[in-house]
Length: 214
Ligand code: DX5
Ligand code: ZN
Image 1 (cartoon, helix red, strand yellow):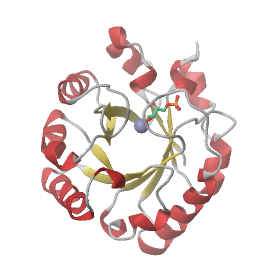
Image 2 (cartoon, protein in one colour):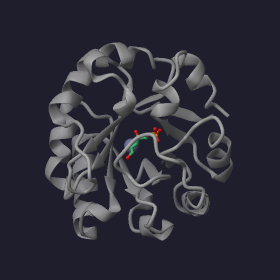
Image 3 (tube, helix red, strand yellow):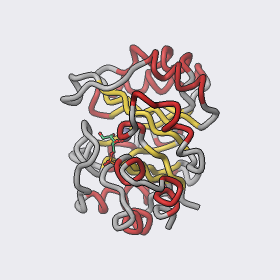
Image 4 (cartoon, helix red, strand yellow):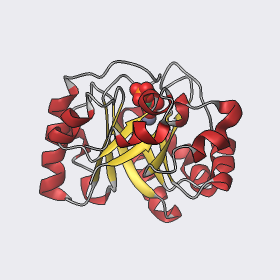
């Protein structure tokens, strides 16, 4: 069964609680944290995650697009994240391992994320302890970009690594997911689909979520 994770990056921040309630038929709530360094954009941080936690019971899938994320793992866990994704490009491998260790100590689920330039093999040192791998299908930083078809091969390779070393690990894709691209990523091996504009850009949000379930 494919899971849908609407990204609140495309929600109306004035009416965030209302917009979170609108996606209650989805599986996860995807929260994009950007620091203006790892990516050329700034979004939301720890206080907002804490406020979101107070208005929903949904599973909070928090995507950290920040440099040296190990500094903030404990804070995001305390704020109420259920899962944290750290980018493999955001620090030295020893520090990525440390970030995953802290996630374990804090009781949050562990994920690593890959920019389009990063090869699938980069997950090998961590795969056995991961709950999810996030493959970006756009350059991280902004919603509403076009899906990169070249990432289908990375999704296939990550799926093969997961099947070999840790079959219960989830494979999430993020960027340009819409009713046209969803079947392609699912066929390549993804089982969690993030969607921002394809959900919040539509009038009928429950129908938009249903349209992504392939
Ligand atoms: C982009 C973010 C995405 C973004 C996706 O860096 O990680 O989660 O919200 O937006 P869409 O679905 O519009 O491409
Ligand atoms: Zn994201």
